[in-house]
Length: 104
Image (cartoon, rainbow, N blue to C red; front, side):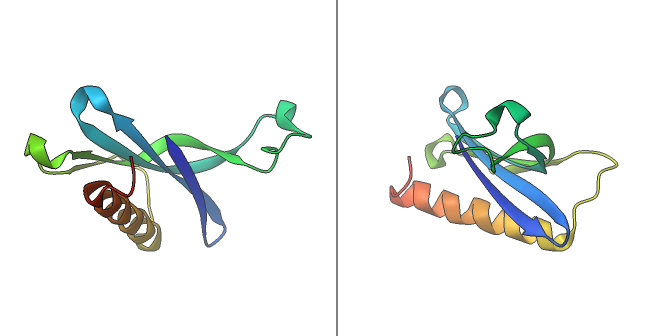
């Protein structure tokens, strides 16, 4: 599982990528970033952020599964176009790396 945070205006968002071997797929989620617990103070991860509830989810199956990627959007939540572009660009980049064998 990988987590990447990025800024969009005054909002910090997270992109999370998780491999689901049981479904032969990758799941990507765009969410609002949440601060780490106070108990992490003084650790190397003290300035990190954690993903919140998913705003947008992409499920991308392995090529041999022959299912198209699917996008799921949470109802009544807003995502700016610029955030969606960053998210989808990162998903596409990661999938290209997976197909080429550069990412596991």
